[in-house]
Image 1 (cartoon, rainbow, N blue to C red):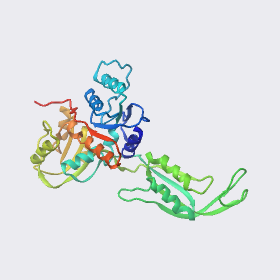
Image 2 (image 1 turned 45 degrees about the vertical axis):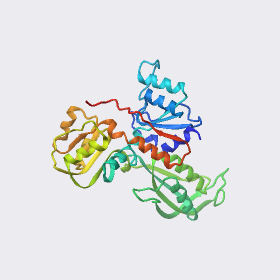
Image 3 (image 1 turned 90 degrees about the vertical axis):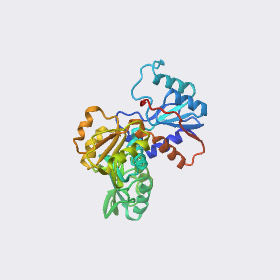
Length: 364
């Protein structure tokens, strides 16, 4: 098995197109065509993690955070980034990052955190726009089912918890085959009228290449007509943060203590307890202060994230409780998530969770 078979699988779960503009997810170091010996999963890639990979005889590190966020002009060993890269290259160890693209899918980092904290009815807190496309094509009536099935098979036609979604109407198509044409129906140089189905369906743009490819294969016409429209509809499968509910109203302090225990946080920094009972919880693994107003607009009682700055706590405005549980602490289950994704693929290779605690923050 080549390394790229594993990374391609991860990109089906969390496409690279879903990462934020500042991010650097994907292959960082290494040759994706190398044979895979084993995988080590970590939150961060450090020198100690590379040493752990060497000791376990694996040649792929899958990290949540990229070791390289911006361009490097020199690699001289002057800092931990340089030293980690040099060590990985010397030992032929590939490094792959799956960062904000995994944050932004509805089965990703935040979904895992919701699960650990016992939240139900979870959905994306800030879903993205302009990610959906509408495909319209025209097919001879008797071939419409074949074409629909082909594009549904590769991901078209999903709306929420429904699939195979399309709208179909009948009409008359016209065309005239010219010199060099080999028409499926009709005669050259004569206008032809064909009863056709107009098929309309929706898809996320990252699947466009696959969907159009299958459309071309399944469609009987030599030259087929199709239209693609960009939609402003919200795509509720992708976006930042999540919001959900506790099974029943819970005492605020009791739930804050639960967060501390479940996340093994050294401390929970929080705003004033303005509500004795809470039920609706918003959260974002890592640095999520940018989502505070989204949580307030959706009437969350509590917002859990990390990396809140001093003045950002004032932004709660006595409308919500902020609980800063730490960056590492709110993302630590990502390793378990990636491991589960790989195990479901039933791959026959050694796969390890790193035993290195890469959290750079300690508590006294």
